[in-house]
Length: 350
Image 1 (cartoon, rainbow, N blue to C red):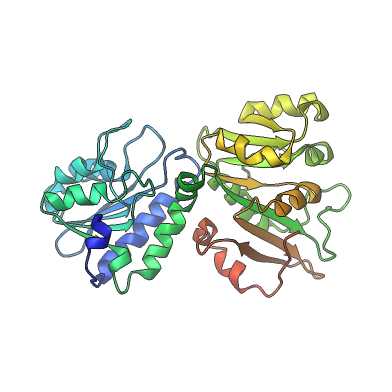
Image 2 (cartoon, rainbow, N blue to C red; image 1 turned 120 degrees about the vertical axis):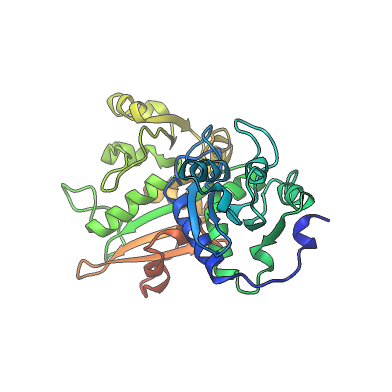
């Protein structure tokens, strides 16, 4: 029996909930550059509930969130004030590229550790928490807090792509489909889009948050898309995966040459092999940007986790909606999620 099942019910203090929100928001800033590691946030509080520091894991090889938070607290001279740690993911208790996060926390006077999600790796789940408990810390789980549901949902959304990869061996797949008022995916002549600036910013923010793009050779021949992040700032020097469904001989050589400047380009001649191709990459979350032929194939194979629809009505107004196959989605951390769940216009998955 692990430490989660041994926990007892408790109430989460209001200041702990606020700290969880801050930790998730900080971690969200780095989603899209932490793969193959998960995005994780950590807040350190004093005995009165004041937040001393908030930190997040930036990218693989860099300090994990807990270690970085402790380092920042030391730099600020407040490490001796640490009483409570709030972490979106169970602290690791093993040495990888960096030392264990449990040891970083134990190097401080921390007394209570609140954990949002257990480590999704079944071989280590509960291990970090048990290690901290065995050394006298009060370890509390959002799962056992009577009022922790909203905070836990945000932590689970943050972790969802990593957890899915751990469980199923492939990245989380989000399809983005834009259609006009007539239901067509084809933009007007001379244009590559018919959506407004707000929708473009949403689409590019999604590109920024993901680790790769899946497309088809037909889309490439028709649009010669760059697939780079524009309209919003990208992570510095970020190189993503670009998986092209179809034969490499059918795309223009000059397009491929330009794409390889920014992406690790892989070709997948048979769409049914897409899960295996994606599994060979370090990506946690990929976005499908393709035409109706590939989207129909992906839909038929059930090879998607959530499907974002951006539709335009007869007045030129954009509407968002999302179809999801799970009880949680990383899309819920975007500010546009409220519109996705409230819009009345709904477009069926192909």
